[in-house]
Length: 452
Image (tube, rainbow, N blue to C red; front, side, top):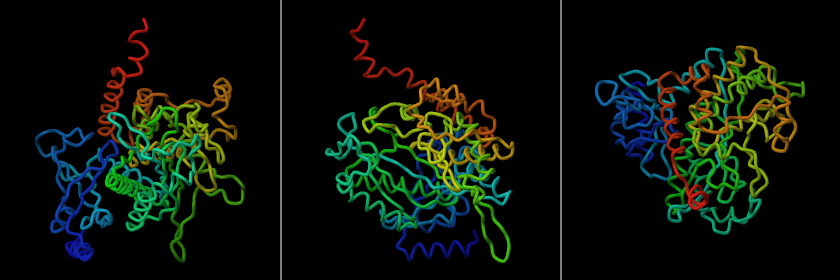
């Protein structure tokens, strides 16, 4: 950015009452990190970036000395926005740079690389991300829904508990709208203390940026009200977990009298939900589903969600089988006119990595001309395992260890992540699984301490 444009941006922010920049980046776990920088240093943030000790950031693998020990979050001027819940502060998103070059293991840079592959074809991916979350309270070492009266067996769309959280939900809506997000709806979801906010779709990178903005706002607004905002995938064993579904469509730029676009997934008057190209994209997503699982469901707890079983509401709403179906919420991919819903991601997923891997898988399906399997209209939660196997419908990985092993064996997805991020992700997730496997739980003590 030129000095003139930087000065204009600084003046605009100053006139909006901003005195401090929150230079924010996203680490490998999908957690927002950053620091405050006085607005007077905006030019440095845009040109060089705010500096951080590389080894202090999860998943960088950077050393403690030399030019590759410093991580710089270089500001993307287009993302500078005042934060309504932090008067005087504007967030600006930083792309990771190390030794003057784009850092290969920065999640946002990974998605930039994936988007660049689409751009060479004149394509862009539109993504609508639907975050589900819990509002909790601490009870010693345990957590419970913040609303003590939220106890229905089927709490979805409950209009008794929803108004009790109106203060938080309306503050969240107003904050997101003030930042330019089009909030479509807010509702109570299918577990106690669980809610969902939907905002309009956008180009892939912008949509992921907005998801991180949502998390920043929700954490701050919940804490101010004495609540715990949680995107843990499944906090309660007997209730549904939190998904983060992606609604996906692919668009092509067209030139003519005026710039226009067409949806490449639109099947036109055929009556089918997806075009042949759209089905090939989905075929790639299904073919790489085991590896994608490691990124879309990246925690030990994620696999408590990805199981078929009863909950107090009657269903888990989370996919367990690798299938697609028209408006089928029990399948991994739910097809809709001109788009599909990828139901695998949970609330703990790093949106940049999940989206980059999704693009790589879909492009592989297109480039290899993969054929999607037959549409499934059955309720997959009710079919016995033998029937599913007879129809060639495979299961998703059922543990983090299984998913990480699938990722290690998938060259397409690993290539999209890059060797350094892949190595760091594998190391962190294998360590997470080992720590979990060695942990002695309260359940084990209660079951075995005096049993034998």
